Length: 304
Image (cartoon, rainbow, N blue to C red; front, side, top):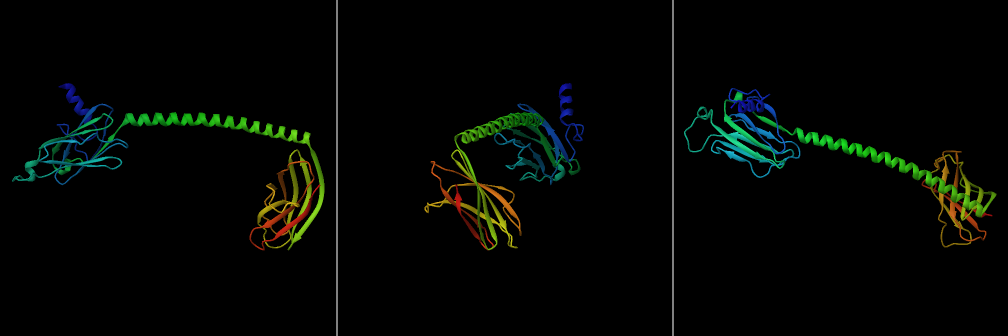
């Protein structure tokens, strides 16, 4: 008996319980636990609804069991979080007054998918003593989530550190392989010639300064100079073999600066493309403007 009384006092702690252990506060929090049944005693009142709000992610296992359905009614709302509403009502077919219902009791048993069970003892009381909101807390699940969150964060830190190490190692490997590839290409063939090829159209000047053959790659260094007061926006740089009208050379272009040029600005570029065979070839380099005057400048005679 002493243990039971102590249990009821603990269960009702913080809710303004009366002598019988029924909560009288308007809002209260109640803890649930895995695989355990916890009991809560609350006052209700005619005209008031008690909202029992579940922790996030907790669902009911089956329908709640309601005792004294003649006086009490409930409604489960499948929201997130889950909510169960319960309230007292006047029984049908009787000549009872609201005062006659004071002290009437019932109970609501709610079974949850976590194995927890909530036993709610209901009693009809005056409105000033009724509970209107019960918020269920799940401390064990909160601790689990915090633990999982910490573990995931730690794992993410380890993976990030490992990724950065692998990235650095891969970057070093790529740099080393690139250097070795360039060294082998230079051992195979290295030939450069300075050029003075130049062309202009509507104050857009393109100069080709150098062509180099290193291994199987050909490099073309050129310059774009905008002498018109309109802003120049680059659309494309096209290379084609002079003796081949069927298609363009697949070239990559790198820039030392921004190829968007104001008046009298210039930018240097480098086109690189692969070449098969040893025969000397001549190329045509075309710079195409995007928008504006849509200027195109062709520079012929780019070769050794």
